[in-house]
Image (cartoon, rainbow, N blue to C red; front, side, top):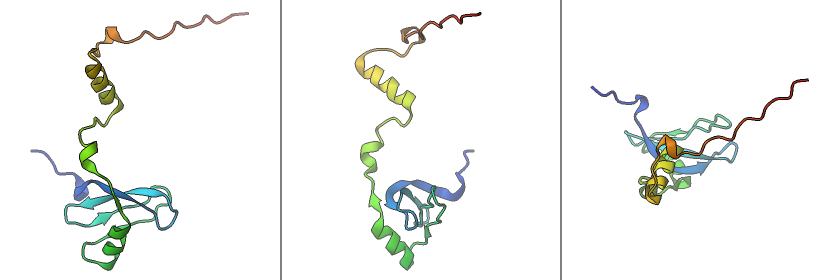
Length: 109
């Protein structure tokens, strides 16, 4: 049986500037409708319960990210490389990869 992730946080819905250090940080929306946006730089905790005045203030400052355009893109670098190779008509076989340059011999005195 698959387990639910702890906390029940959904994907990032947008970004906003931290009220403490002015760095853009991601904002997440929980399954219950609460906003969570702790700053990873200064540690300033941001958590707003749905329906509270703090929720309205935080929601007004969030710049919403359009997730429809990013959902079709691969997330990892390897997946992006594989999709680019597939689009170019190549394959990702180990024999098709470039060999590393030969090592130089060390001079021993």
